[in-house]
Image (cartoon, rainbow, N blue to C red; front, side):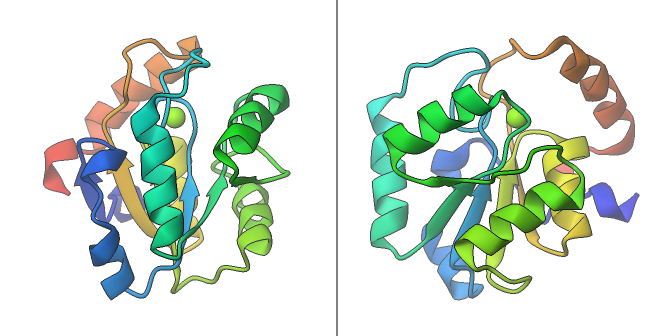
Amino acid sequence: MLKLKPDVVKKSIYHISFNDLINRGIKNIIIDLDNTIVPWGDRHIPPELFEWVNTAREKGFKLCIVSNSGRERIQYFASRLNILAASKRGKPFLRAFKSAMRMIDGNRNNTAVVGDQIFTDILGGKRMKLYTILVEPISRKEFPGTKIMRLLEKTVVNRRLG
Ligand SMILES: [Mg+2]
């Protein structure tokens, strides 16, 4: 059960303190796509997301998307935001995170994982022994299978705990 508890819980990516991460020695952010930075199924990139990515870059962070979404969708966002995307998918399996770690040249001590799902983002990040940040899902719309996982999440993790 401990493996499922995120290190910290935030309302959204915009509530994450870059300075806190810097103080922890974190230089790389592995970031989920759907319902973490954009609503599920949506292709619009809001100006505040561009701004957030730019601020992260200015502060010296390397960002890499790790998503179970379709490759075309992942590339669409990675190229427009000008950030990396892991070549392998399949969270929470380690190969997805390992491919991201190689791309950003990250290690266990300097990399954080940000995502909205316990059983993919947080579990995967924990298995890699990375710093994990759970955010509230942006939209209630999501992949049907995710809805079932949400019910399970409720039984194992109190989101307020973090
Ligand atoms: Mg997600």
